[in-house]
Structures are given as structure tokens and as C-alpha cells.
Length: 442
Image 1 (cartoon, rainbow, N blue to C red):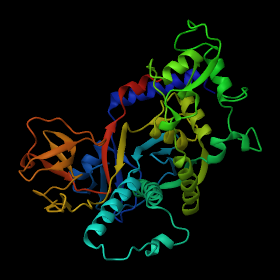
Image 2: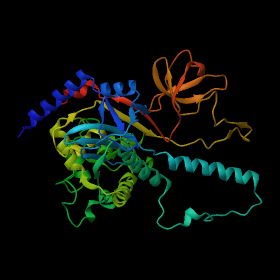
Image 3: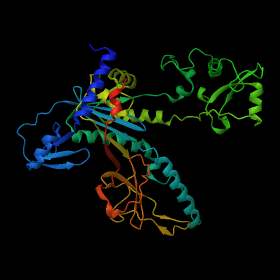
Image 4: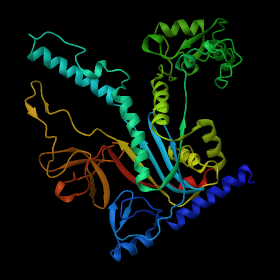
């Protein structure tokens, strides 16, 4: 049995050895397209050179055998999925040997885009067809029962797509999903709980209310004048006013004496401290539905966040979604990283809906190919891979990374200097190496 510190040192050492060996995992499909156990890059190179295999996928690198294999024995692999409403972690393990890691960023812009499109549609209707009578609830989807919103449909499909993608690469025999259940009403108002131990003890535990906690935290002393005003009357002030959507949490509260509090509201003094706006619980609500749907649609086992956190900390791994997935897939066993590559994926829209721009929609926007390229195409420019962010009719392109950050490249890249690596899809993908600083996690 390893102690906590010994397990951390062992894990760090294995990651360091991994970075020195520069291991690359190549995934293998048989002649029928079914996944086999992965092989090393050396064996894959020999198979390709001898004409016994062909390249099936570039990222992650996958080959397909061109001959019938005598035996198709595969080892039982476990797929661990760290579900989420913003980011999803995914990993595959063979009794502690990590064979696959990925992290997916899910779309959270669908509702905002639909609202914007609705504004454009209403404006256009008023301009073009003012004689028409207004209509609503005239679409089948709006009155359908047991219907998910477009945002929820996208998030559930993103989880399902990752699971199917992993099953197309590796022979998965078991899937474990980390889920969570939330009570949004209780999160806002813990007093409604019939079982006081349902949630962990918060920072307000033992205090009458948040005000009592803030006064104790600040030592019953004005945080602006530090007691120089000699005013004994203390008040709790919202750094961001409630009228400006300021939060009632302790991060947005501070203790002030009555003299400083009145002067602050008169505008005679200012605060340098940053506050906090009200948070929303829609992510917690979404996770409840995602959990139910994943367990209903798949034959998966369920685990919980506190178990994953404990295992990850014992492994000495930092907080990343794909490392959480490693802790889930290995089921607490000490991980041995057979690959140091992690796939970073980002879900994007499957097309551009805006066709024109201008006050009267007089200027058309090309949504098809321009010089053979579309938005979000993966291209290679000067030996590096980027994604197309924007296109110019003069033959120039604006490039970005997977996070959407514009690359400041001068001179502006021309399309005839680029090479398309892969066409636009519903998610963009790059492969990155685990950073070296992970090897010294403590």
C-alpha cells in the first residue's frame, strides 16, 4: 500500500519518464472497421510502409488494416467521462494504463444567438410585412411534450458524440460517468433543507446569517477607515450594489462604519475592492437533466465528484477535466500514461446563418467556400496548424487558435500559402502534449 506522498512522487516520475520517451499512441481498426488495441508509432510506420495498412484519421492518428487478422483478441477497456455543462473530460484506461485523453468545450452561445436571430426576424417582419397579423405558438417544436431546449439538446448530443467517438477508436467494455445532482432552491436557500447534512458545511456554518459571518471575518472593524472615524456603528455594504445585480454572497460584502458608509453613498469616497455579481444556477439545472439522459441512453455506471477528487489528489494530478476523467477510468488505480497526447475539442456551429449585412441587407456574405476555404477549416501555415477565423475576398485569411484567439501574424496570411488539413466540422480538434509542469505536481 502506497502512502499519499509516495503515490504522488511515483506518478510524477512516470509522467517525467513519459515526456522523455516521447510516446505516441496509434489507434488501429481491423479490416471491418472495428477497433483493436492500439500500437506504437514504430509498428504503425512499418505497416504503412509495407502496404498492410492505410491512414484512416489524422487527429488522433488512426490506421486501418488491409488484411484479415487471424485473432481479434482485445483487452477490456474502461472509458471514464467527466460530464459537465461547459467542459467534458474523457479518458480510457486498461487496468491503470491510460490510452486516451481528451477535453471538450461545449457550446454555451446557442440561446444568445437565437435571441439575436429573433430580434432580426421581428425587425424584418415589422419592416416588410406590417400588414400581417402576429402569430405565435404555431410551430410544432414549441408545443411538443418532453422537449429539450436547443441548448440542452446540443449538450446531451456532445456527450453522446464523444462516447461514440471513443468507442470507434478503442474496444470499450465499460463506461463510467461522473454525474452530480443539485437542488437549485436549496443552493439559494439552505433553510428549506429537511436534512441539514444534505450539502457540505459552507463558510456560513455556525453563524446566524451571512451578515454575522462578514462582521466576524472583518474583525468588527471598518475596512475603509480601519476604525479611525471612531464610529462604533457597523454596517455591511454591498460592493456592487444590489440595484446593479450585486450578489448577496460574502465575496460582495464588506464591513463599513456608518460614517464611511454614508460618505460612500454620497459619492465622497470610492472603493478599490472588486465585488461580485449574482451567479446563476442554470448550469446546475442543466446537469440534472444531462445526468438523467446519459444514464437512460447508455449502459453506464455512475460515480460522483467527491470520489473523483479524492482519487485525483492521491494520484498527484492537477485539476484538469481530462485528469478527472483519468481518475474515473482508472478507478483509483495508479495511472501509467501510455500516451502524453491530449485531444482538445471545441464544439462550433455547423454553419453560418447570416446571409447578408447592412441596414437593408444589401451586402451578401459568402457562406460557402472562398478560395477553397470555409470558416473553421483547419489549415497549415508555415509548419503550424491554425483554424480560419475570417476570410477576405482579396485572398487573405484571419487565423485563430482553438480558443478563438486571433493570431497576430504579419504579413496577413494568404490563402495560396496555406494548406487545408481538414474541412470544417461540428467540432474543431487539436492534439497537444501534456505540459512538462504537470510532471512536478505536488
